[in-house]
Length: 306
Image (cartoon, rainbow, N blue to C red; front, side):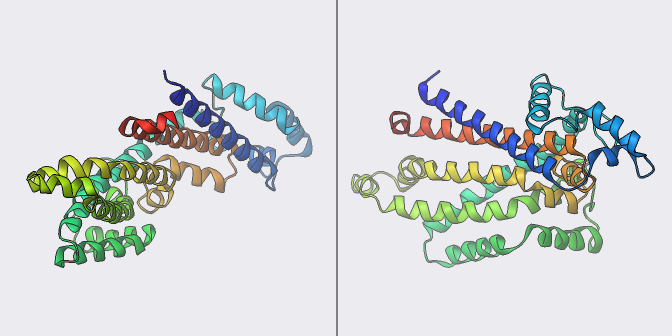
């Protein structure tokens, strides 16, 4: 394993630990008594004292954090204060749904956005370029929740083509994935266009054309290959935003993902669920950024030696 890989693994580990500390401290410093939530409104002060002693709520925050972190390292996320069920089981059920939503949205954004950006770059300042960039600006300007509600109104309520909520079949995937992918699709298409235009003006592209290399080979073999580096960075950043920003989409479409689970847990002050859910999301984002950095270093070996 190279020094660069070890360095990035260390950075990711420190990031995850930092996020876990912040989330734990913010939740436990927030107003309210978790013991009262567990015991219910009819509990006496003696009952509350017993619950605080049982769960360790009276211990100093550093002690509570280390105890929680030790359980996490053993794979024990604790139990939900609201439902009394293992938090790990809830996360194991909800996280694959959020991951499917984020990966599906990213796949659509990349599969459509890069070809659109390339097409706009080829037909620079033409009708196709203006059309693609106009649609991209519109896509980046639409809030996700507004687009989601608009799609429910049109495709679910008016036309009846697709279901408006749930996650039971492939038909349920279409509206949420398209809603979550549109902003990323628009950004990737704009970035691809800008980068391709810059690359096509480079000296090595003009040299290849002067040597009689076919335009298709110039575009795909020389220009696109060098344009992929910044595009990979953008794709990695968008994946992080898709994972963390799926809360709105999951809430609007009633998708039983991790984002919606965290929202419900926050509203009921269910600390173990919030802590476990945010920690899993931070790990997923850190791993995605690590993969992007390693891929970037593979595409551009100079990074490994800087």
